[in-house]
Amino acid sequence: MKKILYIFFLFISVFMIKAQESPRPDFKNMSPQERREYIKNMSPEQRKKLMEEAAAMMAIRNLQIPVEKQDAFKKLLSEYSQSQRAIKEKFKPNKVRNQELSDTEAKQMIDQSFEVGLQLLNNRKLYTEKFLKILSPQQVLKLFDHEGQIREKLMERREKMGPPPGRGPATDVQ
Image (cartoon, rainbow, N blue to C red):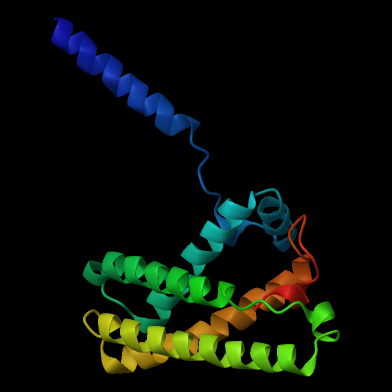
């Protein structure tokens, strides 16, 4: 009898925890204004996760990735995005300060931008090999094309919605 009660309470506890988690709304049935308000009220971490999930789902649909490969693809895409972002973080020129640089400092920044560009390219080559274990070469090529399209869409949406609270104008995103 104790085991049955224990299992019952465990089940109820799990159910209550799941019930407390806020379900993700159906964005397709929301008006643009409702979506905008919902996203504006999210924390930056939640907003970032939502955008990454949306980008992954768009890529899956666009590339027509079979269901059995989708989880591996999502994980690898997330890993690739984090890796690219980490490299980009190394080079964030201060646009206002750039006007005050000496020629030597400006040359150093140019050289640094080339180094970061090479690191991004090398990282892309590394992940191309990893993606080829899951996707066909045509799909990988389409993925990198799709990557640019998603960046453009996100920038367009950010311009429409305005920057997240506490952030500057849309021009500060790379």
